[in-house]
Structure formats: structure tokens, C-alpha cells
Amino acid sequence: MAEEPAAGALGADKTLLIVEDDKPFLTRLARAMEQRGFAVDTAESVDEAVAKVKAAPPAYAVVDMRLGDGSGLDVVAAIRERRADARTIILTGYGNIATAVTAVKLGAVDYLSKPADADEIYAALTLTGDKAAPPENPMSADRVRWEHIQRVYEACDRNVSETARRLNMHRRTLQRILAKRAPR
Image 1 (tube, rainbow, N blue to C red):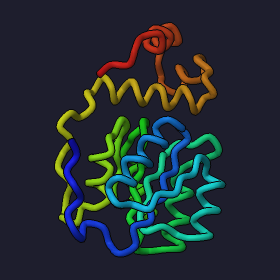
Image 2 (cartoon, rainbow, N blue to C red):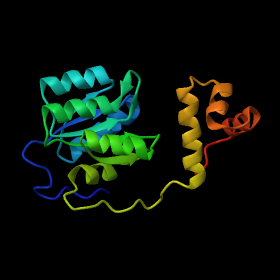
Image 3 (tube, one colour):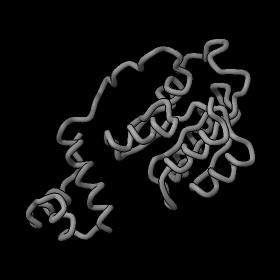
Image 4 (cartoon, helix red, strand yellow):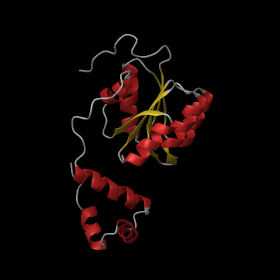
């Protein structure tokens, strides 16, 4: 059972915008954050989120990195432009250092890898200390490699030959990797 939020953990403005294109996850996360004291608004695309930010910039935001119509970094930039004190975190299934650095430069206060649960997200949004604790179960090197291959594969529009060329890998080796399940 989740702990009750500490009194004063949230500021006076408890508005939270959740931007996520996975509808079931969005619904569960919105419900969980409402139970933790947030006034939740949701968006499923970059355009919808930017419109909501322009209408009423939230105090808090949880933004998925990859959305159907673009990058969540555009939403982070729009929030920072409208409200410099907003606490924004990025959620992604495709974490890498370059995008984490970019997200922080644009104003995100944290960067969480999926699957992240409501407690982790709440802690990242309300953390006032210097650093978050390291994850209990960090990704293995095999998982990081697999996710990198998947990112490049998607960037190449799922073209195996082009992906293999960019990764400097034999096409058949890449096909075998893509046929396997994701490592833990």
C-alpha cells in the first residue's frame, strides 16, 4: 500500500499534466496521481499537450519521451517557456545519456525509465533533496544494448539492412537479435 503524501510535499498549486500515448498506462497513472493529491490533466500527443500548456501551464508534468506526433522534449520546452518553476519529469522506454542531458537542459528535473510505477514518479516529482536514490534494479548491459538496437531500428523505419549498416553489424546477426525477446 502506498504511503500518504507528507503534508506540504506538494506546493499550493497541485496541477499535473500527464502526456502519454499509451492510454491504459495514462489512465492508471492519472488515477494514482489524483489519489496522491494532484489535480490531473492528460494529453495523448505533443500538439494537445502544448495547447494545454499554453492555456494553463501546470506546476508538475510527467511527459513520455516518444509520442506518436513527435518528441516529449517539445512539451518540456513549452512548459519551461511558460512556467520556469514547473517540475517536469521525462518517462521513456528508450533511455540514453544524450536525451537525458537534453531533457535536463530543457528543464526536466528527472528522467525515469519505463516501466516506472506511481510511487517512483511521485517521488521524482516531489523530491526536494539533492539526489534521487539509485534504482534498485538497473538495466543490464544486455538490455541497454538491445534498447539501443531497437532505437536505431525504429529510426531507420524498421529497415534491417540500413540498421545493420548504421550499427556496423552483419544483417543476419541483426535479424537474429531482433527475433529474440528483450533481455532483462
